[in-house]
Image 1 (tube, helix red, strand yellow):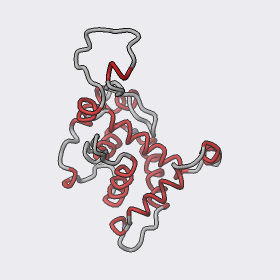
Image 2 (image 1 turned 90 degrees about the horizontal axis):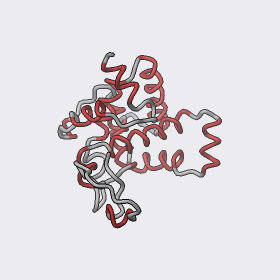
Image 3 (image 1 turned 120 degrees about the horizontal axis):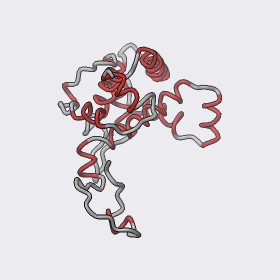
Length: 195
């Protein structure tokens, strides 16, 4: 089986994901400094937009690193370039284009966008009620689908990063004992388990 096919079968396809060791190796290769990032799949404009959206989806806090700290945009870019087949690439490019088209881009391009432009877009499509979300799904709204998938990809890439897995989530590299009926607060201080 080819690597591309293996990743496709076990990984993320437009927002639906399953954790896979092969995908983790892609994430591990995204450890270069974010400022030196040259996108492989995205255009330079798309990369700027994705980077800003991902930063708003999972910002840095006092207690945890943000998506940019663990190179989520680089991971998504590399994953799309290596795991998607031709048909999926076409669909994914359409989704990314719909996000770009939904932003008020001036002659300065993506560099001229303000944080409020990204916040407005995310609020319009992701901070909505279930009824509004269902309506957008029925209408097959491409921007809604694209932003939902980007959010899913962002969370997936974030949770599978080494830093988050070992420092933010509950982590036990060699789980040797099982203690039943122990409240989560006692077992992991309320943290979810790292995979």
